[in-house]
Structures are given as C-alpha cells and as structure tokens.
Length: 504
Image 1: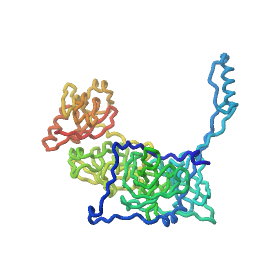
Image 2: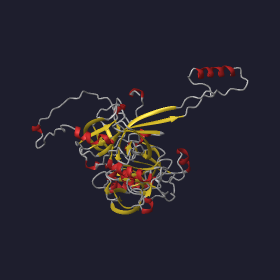
Image 3: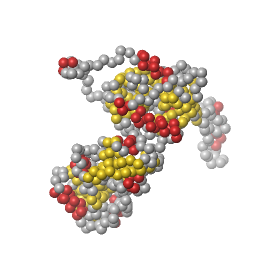
Image 4: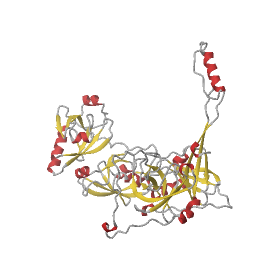
C-alpha cells in the first residue's frame, strides 16, 4: 500500500506563531569563550545504529468498524412521497453510494502506522498509546520484514504509553534494548531517534537534548525531554537513544507549524515511563499514588504573602479531599508542600508526577510550611482512581452575616453574605465568607480575575465572616510589614483558590 494512501498514527502537533523578523546568523570565535572548547559531533553514528536497529519495530494498527446500512427517512404511512424516497435510496444503493438498509455496506477499515521497540527478547514491545488506539488488529513489523501479531498487555493514556506482547520464533530470537537513566541526560548530549516516519520504514536521525522537564500541557504528568533530532509522523512510540545504545525517551510529540519536523520534538523520559511500563507488565494497568489535595503554584507575590523565604516554590494546597489520605494525615488548606518522600517540590507541577510514581500504600514524609513554620507529616498514600476529584475544604463555622455593612478594600466592594446576596449571584448555601459585589476594573484584584459573586473565605489564612473582618485583617497584615495579602477565594459553586493581592 502506498505511503500516501495510509493514515499515519495521530501525532501531537502545535502551531507556532510566525516569526516577525529575519533571523541573523552570528558567529562566535573561540577567543570570546575562554576555557570553552567547541565540541565536534560524533564522526559517525553507524556503529550505534547497527547495534540497536534490530530492536526497533514498526507498528501497524488496524481498526475494523462495522458499517451500518442507511435507513429510510421516517415518513407517515401512506404518504405520496413514500415510493419516491424508497426508489431514490434503492438507486443509490445499486450505484454503490450508500443504499437502503436491505443492502448492507462493507465494514470500514482504518490503519495507523507508528514505531516501537523491544525491551525484552521474550517479546515485550513498547510504543505510544495513541499509535494503537482502539485497534483490534496489531502487527509488529521487525527490521528484517517479519510480521508478528501482537496483543495488548496494558496501556496508559495519561503519559501515552502501551505495552504489547508478540510470540517470537524460537529459531530466530528477538533483539532487545535496555532502558537507560534519563536523569543523567543534559542539554547538549547527543541522541539518535529511530522510527518509521511517514511510513517509510526504519530511519535514523540524530541531534541533541535541547532541554529537560518540558511541560507542554498535554497531561498532568508532563516532564518531556526536548530534542532537535528529526521526529515526524510515524515516529510516535519510537526510541530516543543515548550514545551507549540505551533508550532514554519514547518519542511522542512535536511542535510544528507544518506537521513535519522543525527541530522541536518531545520524548517521554524513561524516569517517567519506566515505572509505568513495569506496572503495565505486572498488573496490566497503572496503579498511581493518591494524596487527595487540590493544589496551585506559588508565585513570588503569594510567597511574600505567606512569609516564605526564598521566593515562590512548592505546591500550595487549595483544597483537601474529605476522604483522602491528606485529610487523615492532618494536611490543611494553606499548607505549602515543599518536599514529598524526600524529593524537593520546586513547583506545583512537580507534585502530581512525584505522587503518582510513589507506590500505593506506602508511608511517606511530607514536608510543609504552615504559617511560616516547617513541619513534617506522615501520609499513607491511597490509590488514584479515574473518578477521584479533590473536594473543597470542609465548610467553616456558620458566620453571622454583616449584611448592612458594605466596605471597600483592595479594589473590592464587600458585603455580608445574606440570602439576598446568595440569590442575586447564585451562591450555594454551603459557601461561607464575605461576598464581593463589585471589582474596580483598574485594580490588582481585577488582574487576578476576582469578580462579583466571588466569596472571600480567608484573609491571611484566617477565616472572615464580615467585611469588617476583611479590613481588620488587611490592616493587621500591613502593620506586620507585609507587602501583599493572601486571600482564599471561592466561586459561587464553592471551588476555592488562593489569590495574593498587593497592598502597595
């Protein structure tokens, strides 16, 4: 089948904005970089390619869908148009362009092509989940042309991985490649990618690691290796090798305005993929750890409002599941998680990945900062289920609305949360705090997307029940020498988030 007639596997792409100006090539002499030697690339990668190519495979995934016959429009019995419609559809059916229900259509078959690699000579193959999708016929095509039928051991859509099994010929053993340590890779290290671009068959491309830890917002566990090695449609699921012939990434996505390689490709690092592959092989599914918190990032303004030294870092807890492990361990809304199971949490995006890779049921130390004081709690991790959604913090004690008092603070008009206010803005009965009735469009509050109908639950990590409480807390924060105030804000449905507002 011609490559142009086949549908390549879905390959994540994004369009980049067009460059507004011309790019100028600038040369830098070695004299301007004292102590730095300009390294040459390897003279040849042929020996490395020969070493690993036999373990790289093409994946052909086919999906057959039973086509449904066309049914006649539902017309009233005896209508004068009944014979006309029946004749029209029967003629179309005879012409092969559709047809009546009495003339069944042939099943539709769609194909996708991708790449993969063998990690165990017993027949274990790794590829991308999106390469196989919901296919009901998967073939693994070896470098020498042999075709082996594959079965799915398990797959994980969250980091786009799938593990397959083939039955090898005892007289012709399979070649496998080992997983390497992606954590040892540095920007500038040489890598090669091998795969099946555009259905052409085994192809080798070379480049370097451009960056690590890339978040392209494709899922909750983004931690990609970025490379400039040419990666195109059909390379999905193929390996990214280091110079020792070890797989340090699984090629998964590209950024491209054209659909082809422009030198920005992404691979799932083996540090992320390895534990998932092990679990898929062992259980046929992924069993991720679950903490039961909703988090947000800590920027410098929020860090100042919290009294954190060293600027923004960690993951700020904005909600705790009432039935989750965090609640049982004593973690609270407003705590900042800075270390989990001995691993530093530099930003909120780190925490889901670290927690998910921790075994279910393990007892771990969680270091937090609460009101400026560092503390450590022991948490027994639960298991993340598909339906798990962290819930809002338990409702605060019932306030006494100060409905007759309206105050202005931080560019906000504030009012007690009365029945009238709830009805006007649609605020649920479970939401407690102080109602925002107006927002100055030129204020910092407007920039932080606070809007009328929001409810201020806490100021400076203390509960507020009236506009007077809000202004009193703000005055106290100013006296303490703080330059910003941290607000816990709920929307009308009770979903909360922290917002740091400047007091200057």
